[in-house]
Length: 180
Image 1 (cartoon, rainbow, N blue to C red):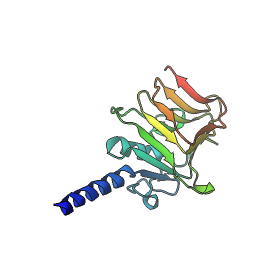
Image 2: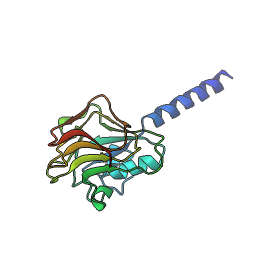
Image 3: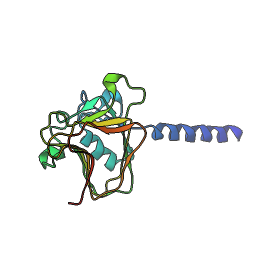
Image 4: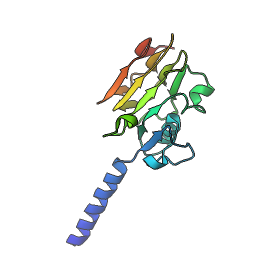
């Protein structure tokens, strides 16, 4: 009986450990045809990882290195000209928070950065109304021009800047809350 209880305890512990640490990985070296479930099989687009996180049970996205407009060439923000390099759209289920984080212990070349540098007149990231997102261990920088904010939030107060989140080097605003 003790062996059965021990086995069940270890199985439950392993299950919780494995699923608590799962993440979608995003890297400029990635490919959106990958599953994104490891650094070696990372996707390229932050928005692709976000859509997968919204649809599935994994609610964490780990960014490796710098992402910019080149990694988002097929993204929804470019298709709909939302005025930002990255766009987190409200997909209907806003009950769960998505964490976007950098890799802990990353080298200087792997530090997580979301950048709009070189993207004329763009915000770095737009967060749609109702979206719940938490940024940790990541830099949000390079917003340029009249709309050059770091984070542009539409009618939402569900954005958390957690440990290691830095918003800097944006021309207009670090954080802009729009009532559009």
